[in-house]
Length: 364
Image 1 (tube, rainbow, N blue to C red):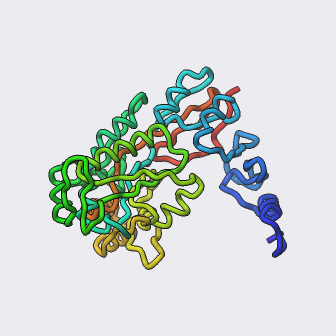
Image 2: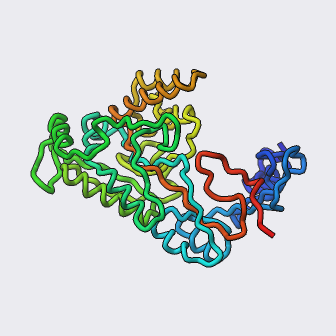
Image 3: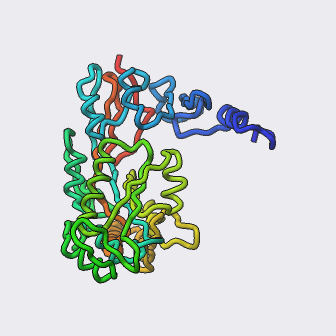
């Protein structure tokens, strides 16, 4: 490694980017600018396959809230237009193509079963039954050229072979059943609009959001708060620094509820860690900590079999168990909608495929 043991982060990064042969097939890192927060990638001269059409690609670290402005100011050449507010700003921009696809992109309400009221499966199930997923999907599709599909499966998207709705009795809002589950869990009903109580404690859940949350995500959080309030579950919305959201909150199971996305799990074995039983402080990627020996065994067997039909059956059996456990609540498949500069060819939504930057280029 071309760096001394007492190197600064800046000198190490410069040496690493400049001399280590880091490559992703046809493209390699050309330069790294910590101050400007950019990485420039260039064609790898040692690549034996098709040569990239672009001389360089500059990747910018941009706050999510500033990406649309950067695009409209022609500082970048594409941005997401998947939120209603972004789409409305971008759709009429001259020189812009709106390109749509159906990616493996699941918007999920995560339930943390490692501590607090949600340790009880009955409370998790009640929360699931208290949420109207169709209403959240409708909000997500408002003012968009694409209506998101409510999901009935944690492992398959509706446009994938093997998809089936395994939600059982937990896919539709049922406030009466939710209230029965809360009664059975010992949370006393104190009347309309009042939080349930147990042993002198209110039934309150902490819904954690990044500080830059606005628009659609905030509307959905408030709607979820309202819906759960109707069954006696108080929800407190808490914004935390965006840079800390995953590292200090989600990854450390420091939340009760949170909404985030899971993307590109086309190869289902990649999802194993997200449903695996934690071992001590190692959650793998199952930050809510909800699992069972049955789910572990099914997912392990599914990841090992080479029989495609059997694999599909095993994942669907595991999915039905995951629903019953109240692991998380899949909401809808988020559409992949890009605003792309006109003339930029072979670039945009990939659907269930992979991005091929080497094929992207400008039309003459």
